[in-house]
Length: 222
Ligand code: C5J
Image (cartoon, rainbow, N blue to C red; front, side):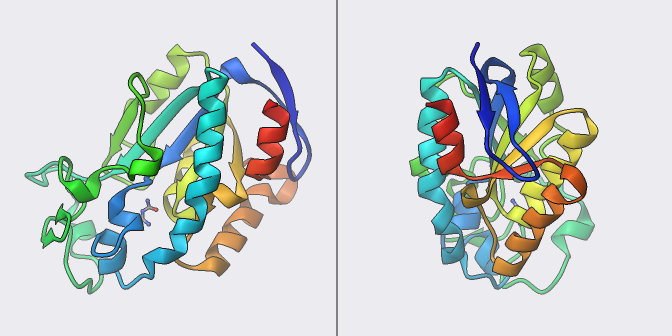
């Protein structure tokens, strides 16, 4: 156990690292690489690359400190029985969930595009949560895993800031976890949504949690 104080907004937060998990949200090829789900929706996926190196630095540090590391992946069963029709039919993408793409069927479990990017690949023993929705708690066993490990605090990284990171932070906050979001470890296809999403988390005394950055968290962990 190590108690550390992390500089953050709206104020410093003290955590016990043995009760803190690092969560990497959806750092998948389907969101970060051309031809995947993110690009089919009309987004410039290169905008997400900025978060990879800071995420890697936090991942390395968390592993050195024996912190629980959890990875999530958004996607669906190959038969798509867990994919709401309203999600599959949404919008006018160039290809829909389940359609073939350069990395296999889009957003389908087991396909290369659904997998995590090599730079942030899980190590043996790190739980990977497959989630059908945006939030990492919806229809998954994440809360059980965290409770069994006595986790109270989450450092939430990943993509995209205002979608899966935000939904996960809101779900976690309602379940009693303290969430710290490192601003440089998440990214959005819409830089303005990234900025506003972070402001929403730390506003009103930290209504959803705290916002810090990789440099300040690494300094606190030592
Ligand atoms: C989206 C996500 N943006 N992981 N998913 O659809 O944020």
